[in-house]
Image (cartoon, rainbow, N blue to C red):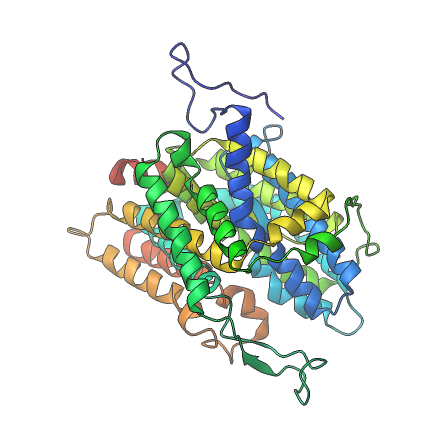
Length: 479
């Protein structure tokens, strides 16, 4: 791991904002802010997969602890860097990709298969991903500003769905529990009684207002932790209204050591491996969009070498995930949005966030305490952060030539249109082969394929785009 660069001073003005190191108290607060905004998403995948595979509470706890531990470890490697091969060295928090959920459930519920087959497929796919990273980064010519701006806009719009669901208290329909609902058939759904409650919406609005006021009137460090202070204020309000519950904190273990292969040695079957290799390609596309967004926000050019390091680390993180009983990793979009909202561009902040995630994985009581933050509180913060990602994409598109090149309008129109399909019509591809599910149910991937393909058709391939640099030159710096 490279040595830490000290904060810039008048004598060292060349240190970039990405490489500066805030004082330890600020690092801790800013790192905790990143952890709070990603925690719900970080534990969602093991919860979903564990429930689908009908794991016991003890095994589910193992999955969650392993997930938090690996989130922290891979975030540190991605942000700080490790040798010259790994780490994009930007403020990135890593978490399990939702693109892997459907394929992993399909693998784990296949007769004769289970978690060892999932972990074997994850490990094999990660090795494939690390080999593919240098080839993938040679495709930068497919991502000029008209494509990156479109994809980043779709990333933000896709995330807004998550933020809104948090704010309204989850999905409108939720599964019934047959044991506690007499007469209910397995798989039956019932209306969520907490959906869009005035109290929950009021909490989300309160958090959003606190963030906006601190962002406007806060000075210096206070403005940088606007999201954290909004979350704290929201938790205080929720607690006063009886909306925070700490029973899980009392029941959680005080310490748990994360060990490799706790569910048995991995099993390698051809079809699951090929399926997870497809998922890794989806992850690479999504990560490329995130990296370009961060490049625009931080003013750092994403060149071929940097992209290769970032994608290779996605593969390395997925290896670690398979070994330590968890799943494929990618950069988390909500944390990209947090960088845009706060303007804090130091990668050492996310290194600190990674250290906090490591500790949460080893001390389940702390993880349960963070998990007690109500969804409505997260929703208020999510609306601000996720909108910032979409705004960054729009800003990049502001530097695109639409006056003399009318084809660029078509690229953006079709790219956004296809990217919206999984959001507004999730069953649009109902009758397509199930094997194509990882490709067709990702709005980000659809937008990327369509925008990049149309750009290639209309504008041709430019071998050396310097996409992030030209986007910054055309649109101006975000800050």
